[in-house]
Length: 602
Image 1 (cartoon, rainbow, N blue to C red):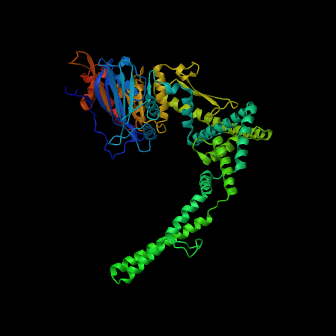
Image 2 (image 1 turned 60 degrees about the vertical axis):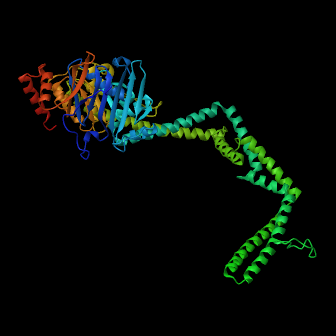
Image 3 (image 1 turned 90 degrees about the vertical axis):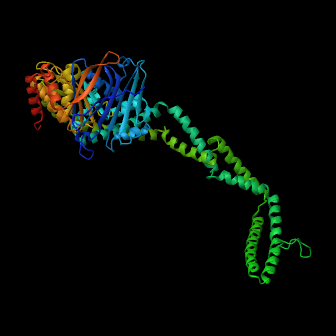
């Protein structure tokens, strides 16, 4: 069967050349996403450009499936109810990342490799039974690995996806980023100081509560170190003793072998056998006779061989001298043999007691080194506990001083941050909303990030009490608060890809245009994908994708098609969004006016 042809949403404008600067891809960007078998989507490929991409279409056409697909691709929860009838859904994406992106290091740890063009390929599949698999750089990986990478790549902001904003820890991190690099360095110093203090405090508590057990352990270690020190083994001494014991134990046999070989090579040079006996001819005598005979022949070839025999004779003589030295040095003293055997037995006992199997003396020495280190941590004497208490108190004092400085930095930054977010909200149909930070400090119970609990509060209208933002805002308001924060952090947030799902819900008129303007500003530093139903927002897009319902001629069911629009096609789509009639002259005139306004310098 022929492969199914994939529908492709061709970009309305050509992508920037590879050599051209791409502002929104500074930290990375998605260049292509393929979605198949997900919800109403049969099989489409989206070519995503840097900048602002908007996704529009009729209600129920499947716009949300684009967001669902991106969320699934980056480790989101797999919902088998979204899988089409064929039984398997999948999303594939191509990431373009700078060489210094931290994502590359994590991907390499997972065994992923870059594609031929230097991009990183992600993929995710979900079956109708709920089974899910993730792939990174051609390797199957746990979904958790992709989700971990997504923390540095993607932020999804929608009606029900405001998780980052609702977490107090994330609100504290946002405030720290706003306070600036010097403050972030202070927070890092606090984190290190907290780790030191906790380690000292836990060590002191352990020594105090486990005095008896630690003392017993320390005594065992001391006894072992004393036994080892009494023997004082040297590296590789066991091997040397084995060789020495063998030589001492077999001295007579070794002497006989060496003497026999020496006599065969050079004869009796000691006179021990007497001069009157007939001795067999030795090798040096035979070689000398052969050399004289050849040298006397006068033939050049034989003379050359005589010279070579002279060299051989010299080697044989040297070996004879060395054998004589070996015999002279050979010690057959039984007392020395007993001494060596006793030393070897003592070392063998140490090896059996303190070394792993086969480790020898090296294992004993390693145990002694480790025991010395452990013993320094098990000292429960009054002097040791007093010294450790002093170290803990000094670390606590340092931590408190850092906590106070971190808290002061957050308190100072909170007012400015809230004011900046409030100014952004004023242009997002939330003019009367008031944003503030509640910084609660408990210097007696600091955590790694400081002694502060930070809460982002929102008073949605005059007279309303300031409440935690996820409790005091509706879904649309929460999305706009998130948008306002992202705009404030446009140049600082390292997340390269941001997705907003209908952040303009419940907004219209001038406020809608302001949302589009702010999203366009955000897209100067990030790749931004927005699902919207407002023409005022869509007019600011660099790439405009339209989701259409299209009959599936094969199965007779509704399917989704995604196409990129530009020129007059885009004007007609904006007119449809404005008036519900794509061919309305009034609607088209208004659409051209929106495009003209959006095209003006920001």
